[in-house]
Amino acid sequence: MKPQRKVITYGTFDLLHMGHINILRRAKERGDYLVVAVSSDEFNKLKHKEAYYSYEDRKAILEAIKYVDEVIPEHNWGQKVKDVQKHDIDVFVMGDDWKGEFDFLKEYCEVVYLARTSGVSTTKTKQELSKKHG
Image (spheres, rainbow, N blue to C red):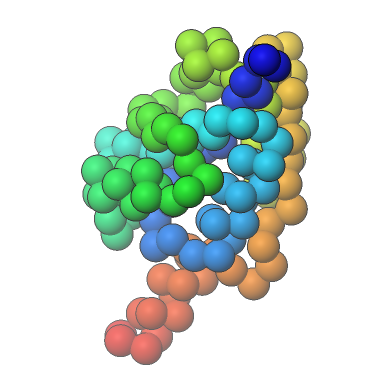
């Protein structure tokens, strides 16, 4: 039996949209097991980012998606190396808006930046909702 190829990606995953589904699907295509690290509520505060849904809700939503095998919390910027080592990760995947930012992980695993889904983002969705209901 061939060894399982494990993939990890990171994000806030608030107000789920097709861009999120696309990156999860494309990340899972790179291996057999997908770990998704989701920003905790405390980490979002540190990043000055406000999520509509709590960490627990975002975790539950992601766990219901067929591409996702495991959801872990992201508590700080510096935990990526530990996560890759602890979860025996082969491939680290992020959107290409982060291109080059995580190249330091190449020492531990393959690093892949995937093109984002054009025209879709949580920020854009929040802006459009506030226009409609503002």
